[in-house]
Amino acid sequence: MTFSLQRAWYRRHCDGAMAAYLDAPPPAARANVKTLDLLALDLETTGLDPGTDRIVSIGFVEIEGRRICGDRARHILLKIDGSVDQSATIHQITDTDLGDAVSERDALDTVLTHLQRHVLLVHHAPMDVGFLNAACRRHYNVPLLARTVDTLALARRLQERGNKHARAGALRLHALRSTFGLPRYAAHNALSDAVATAELYLALLPRWAGDDALPLRTILT
Image 1: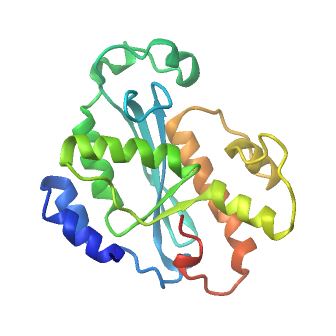
Image 2: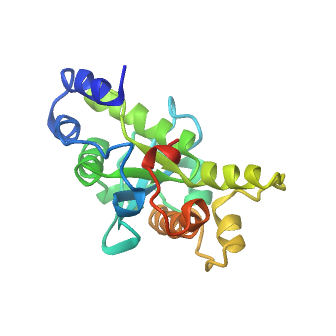
């Protein structure tokens, strides 16, 4: 089943923000990625298992072509059942911080509205997309179906082109930013990591095509 047919099939099984997202035409796989809009996104969670753990914050920022739109950046805290427990030592978000947070459904509605007609950009897609899929199934009864670019996968493929073996940790977001001469930001904040991912993507892009057009399909995860 093609990507468009999958979206049409899912559309029949949901409503609300997910239905509006699926109604909007997705970016074409043949389109020049250098002219497309992307949504760089990062999550902080209570653990590593999408089946049992929950998202506590979402950060995202839009990219137009080769420009990061800082005025469209968002950082959203999400209510969860129970406590953040020991995960607070990683992301520094406490149960008190979540007192005025929005519901998971409201947060997803916001993300889907901004993701319309955009390519999803993440670092280490299995993690973030796994949590988004689980959350979307809870609230819309369908997974998230998005054209996705993974900066970790792009960096790995570049290394393989050069027949280089990455040392342990070399493909982590902040290690890659150092490799490309980008400034270091504080880790484990969803918004700063989303911006960091957007900047890394723009640094990786010229390595793939120089000044030539680059079809989106060549870098999709």
